[in-house]
Image (tube, rainbow, N blue to C red; front, top):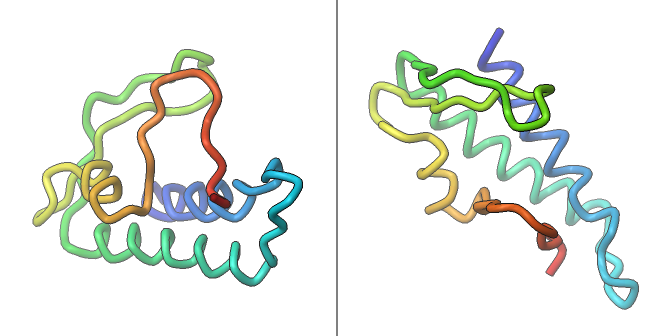
Length: 101
């Protein structure tokens, strides 16, 4: 259940990321869908490596989402692997950048 939730969350967040893109740049829905699919597939590959462990489980600062570390048998830090692969970006507060460029 956790794996399905993680994949669904990444898929939804990535697919809806570009709603507030610059007015002079209008990406096609197909491009956005393809990017979301690549991100979801990257996470799926990582989670398929073996046993998935979730640690340091807590709530985010708003209390509505789970904040946790995820690892697999071959990847000690799934978040870091997604960052390094260009499938995710770090967020340290403030306004987030658009995925659309």
